[in-house]
Amino acid sequence: MAKAFLWTARLLPWFVCLAMFLWLVSFRFPISGVSRFFFPFDGKSRWLDAFLPADRVTPIGAQPDGWIGQRITGDPVYATAHAPALFDRVLVGFDIRPINVSLIELGLLRDAAAQSFELHPLFSAALAQGWHRVALSGRTGYVKDGLSDSTLLSEDFSSLLTWGGDVSSLTLMDHGLFEEKEYPTAWQGTYDVYVIPIDGRLSFTISVQDANLTRQGSVALIRVLHNQQVVATDVIQSSGNPDQILKKTILLQSLPAGVYRLSISADDRVSTVTMKTNARHWVIGPALNIGKGSNIKLWTNSVHLTMRAARNEGRQTIRFGSTQTNITDLDQAVESDRSPNETDRVGEITIPNGNLDLIGDGFFTLDPQALFYPKPRRLTDATNLSQEGIRAVLTPYEQPESLGGGWYHVHTSFALPFSQDQLRFMLSLPGIEIRTGSADIRSVELVYTRPKLSWTEFWCAVRKELGLAYHRL
Image (spheres, rainbow, N blue to C red):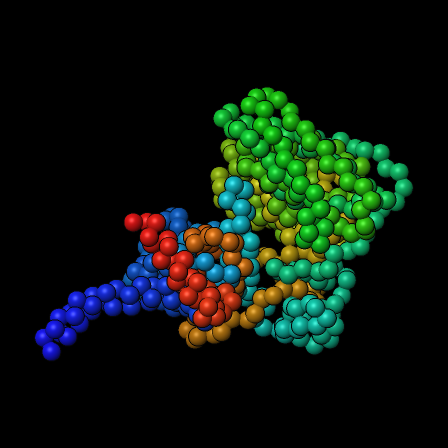
């Protein structure tokens, strides 16, 4: 009896260690394929950090008016989630209380170099009443009450908006000879150009200048996409000389009809100084960062603009149609809207001194004859659906669950990149400073998923984890 007790005492620690190990492996590799976390947003959970920067949020924890969480007062804010292991998707949910906030989006960082986020709809006050959700013929969105569900299938972009959704790519093709034109530009960093080929041919020559004196390797990544599929890629290499103009020509032929997206990814030290193209119709947007320049003119179908002065020279008066907007502060969002009686025609933007970051709900061009509409305008925080004659909104957005007292449970989900256990999120609340608004977050839901594991796959994961543990010794 004593001998059996002695053996049990000797083996018990090993059994405990084995049980703990198996629990940790099952935690990292759940057989169900699901790891779910729901916790108060009080700063004590390791799964999601507090939102930053500090000047746009309150300290996380107990708030002066008696609730526990964090209040967002500026746009945008960022937080990092720590995944328990490698998963295919994550659902992110918040119990949130918007105050004087009309629109909220959540983004996941996709390109760290370009600081590019994939944004998803999270909350809309405009769609809360008077609209019903429709899923029809591959499209999802909202249709104004009293109208047929088939309104969502309209190709009339003047009465259709998008918000995180998309329409099928238009099958467009220009024809005939069109002489190449070179346009002086003053764009900085990342931007997208949408273009229609001419008789299957597409030609762009991009000239850039890099102000980074120490950069080695590539200055910018260029991709051409059609229906979200990459057609061609190229890079512009650094010369190490900031005074040198670097040129790259993209030439594609025998292209099928459609709208092509020329995507340039770079940081804000890289300036596009000229662009030469044979395209008859091409537009930029919805975001454009403008560097040094004078008396810059753009044409747009946008009705709403958000502008920020990037440098002191960006403090100026901007003319948008008949609207004049004074920009007096650095790095502060300023909104400008065209008069309702001007929205049925192309709007002209005049920027006297450059040095301005623009985001529109439509697209921009340097030549009014080149303007076309590759997709509908975007729903923004400034959109007045009734006044602008909008009949449908194309979006994957789902109405949030009302929790009472002005609180809602909102959620969205993202596909996760391979081998990434730290996820950088951006919460965007456009117009929150202008409206003196806020958004309170009191709890968080994180649901990580991947395909369910068989017992064989689970034990393979156990053996792999044992091997990794051995090599760490």
